[in-house]
Length: 139
Picture (cartoon, rainbow, N blue to C red):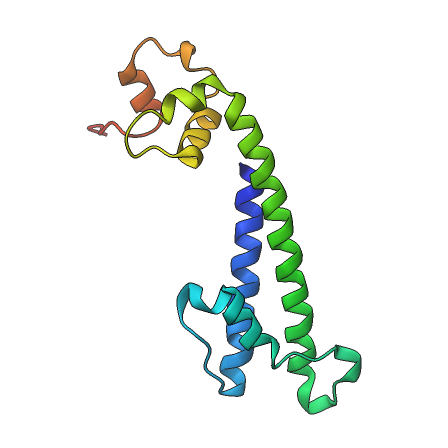
């Protein structure tokens, strides 16, 4: 789960950098997640160019090409991690049990199981809530 979060953070950094490249060129790209759909990536890719083929005034296109390559590689890594986490979740009884709670999906259940580790070390649900920081304290 921790590595998945690392990958998501890397993806966000690259996406923000790509947005900055376009902003500096005065080119607007779709807002939000629409820029990262297949159609959005295709639109962005129209501006890319292999770095070796770029003239000095278009190095940003080469930088865009490299960033889009990195983004694609990270998406593939994230998919591999998600696939493996799904396999583990299918066999973990704690994850399965937590998913029976309305509003608790696989990722939430995985995070809870990972954070609590061995839930039987707690005497009651109040201790779990306190451990997770969900109980207000006078201090």
